[in-house]
Image (cartoon, rainbow, N blue to C red; front, side, top):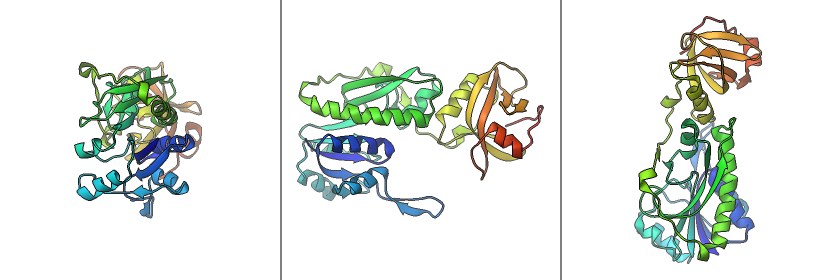
Length: 305
């Protein structure tokens, strides 16, 4: 099928690779403009652009799709359908109406739950036991279009936002290939708006740990904010990032260090306690608790936060 692909990060790059492997005629790849990245702030192409370049695909990086020139470029390629995955630009109605078979979105949740920018992280934070991929026909709303297929997977106890992202990226690639193969036979299903929840964009500030919360809630936050923005707390006036932690059966004043040994650093929460097994000082490396304690003395009775 002749298509336009629109996407930017790794999640979208996985789908583009699968579409290429499936033999689809990708007439144009849309992706965000190159952005400064790394310590040198060097202009860096998106993950999708890297894949497109490797396969010699035509690429466009408009700053907006609202102007007539960008829309004419899309119209000129004669694509039957547009596939969109974490693109990052709003598609105006004029663009949604261009492909004869519409614009299909690969969304990383089981809609209508977790519409919006951060569905993977919000699912973990909420304690959801499953999530998945929804292939939907895009409309002018925020992830409100009719659903063509849904594919569920469990959220495992140890899943972080990164591990769940990787599973969903692979699932999304398979799901869009299957949807295009079966497009004529798929029956669109309207979303139940009364069941909708919103997955707000992540901020750095929400990564700050509030030790008065239950340990189970903080443990979910550690997993959900791994790798961004990272769950954070204060220790001796500096910031610590908490990368891996589990709930443990202990009690004390919220933020109080109860134990610190090679098994981890146990900190009391509003309910229960958290055993931190991997953490990082500002400017340092991510370390297992045993390695961290070899270079930093943490004493029971100290207060974090």
